[in-house]
Image: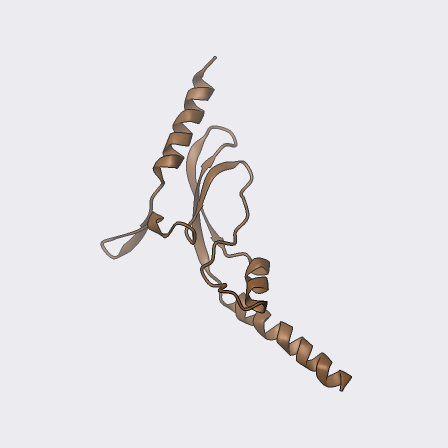
Length: 116
């Protein structure tokens, strides 16, 4: 009986892990880079495994969910999963826009940097 329980536990943990790992979802983050000279930047990154795996194990939605952490040396981070409005299709191609909050933060940082 213990062997059957152990095998069931192994499969119960392994199958969701394989499912989440094989469903690689890349998405875009846009942010204000503060390292060095401030600028608007973007980063294509994979969705993190562990938060998605945990959500999958307890039965919550895990695909295209905003479960990303923060980025070091950055402000006003927008994840494509949290802000689908940043994804714009132009003539059949996908483009990503920066928000007005990000632009305002960049301007404030540049003004602050320009002050003696």
